[in-house]
Length: 205
Image 1 (cartoon, one colour):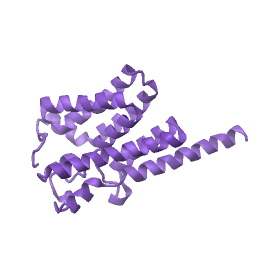
Image 2 (tube, rainbow, N blue to C red):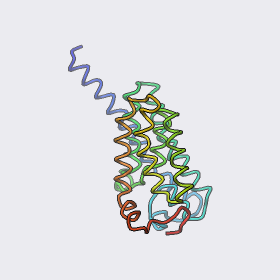
Image 3 (cartoon, rainbow, N blue to C red):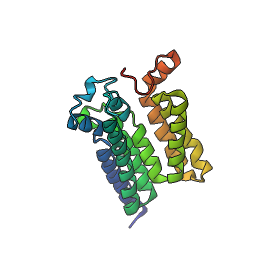
Image 4 (cartoon, rainbow, N blue to C red):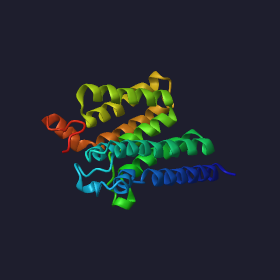
């Protein structure tokens, strides 16, 4: 087998894991749980987002918790499955693709969520210590500010710091990519944060 055949084979495997990760990530659990529990069309509630924060605006904490768990879970499953079969490169590819799938699902005309729960699931699966540190960062920020979007942004950025801190240098590059995507999905929130109009956690708006 020539080096070109090996490169083609590697790219083929990574493409497979990218497609699998994207497929898992694109499952809109927020919409599914909202409809299953009779909460109506999530697109017509609050911000119209499909994530757990918007599900919470329905007043149903159980539905929000389930959405958070399943959105994080699809990132975990994508990473661990790829990692167990094909190694670290496949796991990182599947993780990034799962986040892309959540943010831009083909089933919803590429209008998905903002990716926070899936981001945390991906990081937790790739490095539990880094993931737990990011979760703690989110919780600490949320406790102090009561602003979900700011907590998400700080947690996403913190992954870039926590990765080398826990000697997970191979995760640093991916953390940068994931953080950029999370920040991009929160660009409207960033504007509202500067304007001082971003709603607090639990707000109906």
